[in-house]
Image 1 (spheres, rainbow, N blue to C red):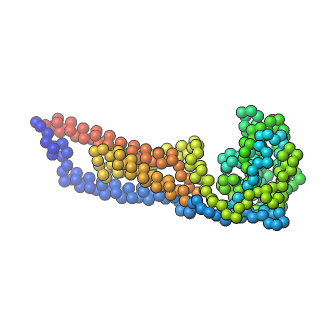
Image 2 (cartoon, rainbow, N blue to C red; image 1 turned 120 degrees about the horizontal axis):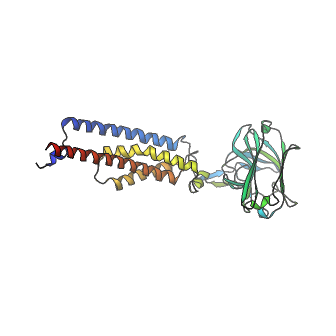
Image 3 (cartoon, rainbow, N blue to C red; image 1 turned 180 degrees about the vertical axis):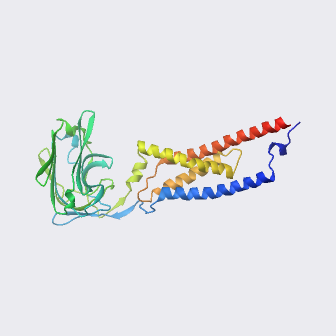
Length: 347
């Protein structure tokens, strides 16, 4: 016996009502899911986009530089290529404006950005912290030191860091660290990294406080960082959130793990769209729709504080939606084939 079109898709009234209820549920679920994705992507909804900002660093006539803790730029080019030096000494006289600062907040850095540095002196909570790049040949290491609770005292503190064939850190006249390094310790320093006071060069870890002495000695030649004209301290500058630069850098393992979570979170959305708006060939339309939503969510992060746009996340989200459609399509094909087999057997 032949199969007519009504026999191929035998919907009865009950099945039609169930299908309508499923579509209504799908519509509600999709709205709730989209609202949740907006919350996940854009919370805490504090705008922080590219803009011109007033410099939070100011150098007084008596040679004291003050940092507000927000949008600071006081940078200088290296006096010599760092990897050509054999001895570097940094002397600082600092006091904090806030007992608790995070990041760690940068007091002085010789760095490219917050991910890569030769030297960091900063504040983490109320601890004074030090990070020093050293090594020999291909063996690059980083010494991580801290003087706990030092900056709970808001008075002035004298800090000295010496890097040659030794690493020695002295705070208020007391040596807190002294260790032997390789004779080529400075040879692994990146030669062109700039000096920055009060923040990273890229503006990622602002510190609030004051510095009244900042001297850098390279192979016996001393440079006063607070001398007029040594630091570039513009009144205003174009602030570019560091997360925008991070978005174009190579993803770290944790970002890849988060990408997998995004993929899984978008699978239900693809399934719901396939159920709510079934189409014979859904792939081009759904790819465009999912891509637009994913790009909009990532683009919104550009202007929101604390959020990090990521092309990897966008790709994972679109892939998750397509996977959801594929799962529904595979299940539907199997269900239809089973139904047809059942109809044939009855016929």
